[in-house]
Length: 322
Image (cartoon, rainbow, N blue to C red):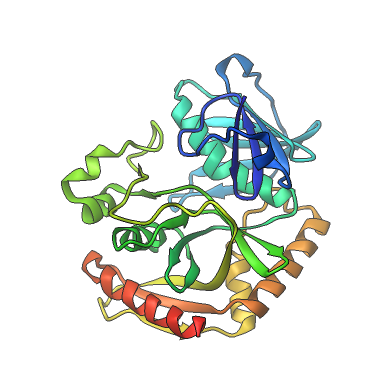
């Protein structure tokens, strides 16, 4: 087995997860909820479900994820890609069916970037659909709907020397020193046009995240500092929106009520029928918006405006840090 930590979880996997650094000492896993990943082709055994309690679709209306309760846990179905079984206690995750593509890279991507954030939620952690970067003023997160440019903005920060802390899953937990975020893994996932805007001709040096997409996993960006591998205090969250007018980027303060509503729409949830989990999530979000500033960041749909967006965020963080 290969041992890792990510999203505040201790992972034992039967395949290598190339995005993560393997741990040599079992002591590094102490204090984290332990999750076993079984992704090997020899272990596949299809599970069928009849009652899908949650379904997510892309903008064209095609289902991209369905969730169902099955004997002993949950089934997460990514149509035409893979099915995953998650035990009721969240401690076992198994790829139960890979469909016909045979791409272990796709299976590992789905497990790491889609399934484990839901498992973190099942295990009582607040998992936000957010990207985060480490700046000289502290850690900040970017939340927004798909296509608003969270990952592209984070890549711009990385190229300027500010490392990415996570891409798409930001886990926030309570510590003795306050609210901290648990590390994800280095790099971002960029669509082809974003990768070219950031990396130019080097965009092709980075592989697609799976067989079904041209989205690239970009893991080494610019001259950014070493990836932070310890929980880090979270000092601000920005709700990213797009401005089609190509105006200068703008930051507005949000009320606690609006901040709560925005973040509520941006959490990973495995079992939306679990009232105890929903109550715990509401309490965690209420604590978060009461202690961490949440702003709206409006940016233009223009790659040339990324440096200006980066600078306005850094200026705002300098005021928050003081």
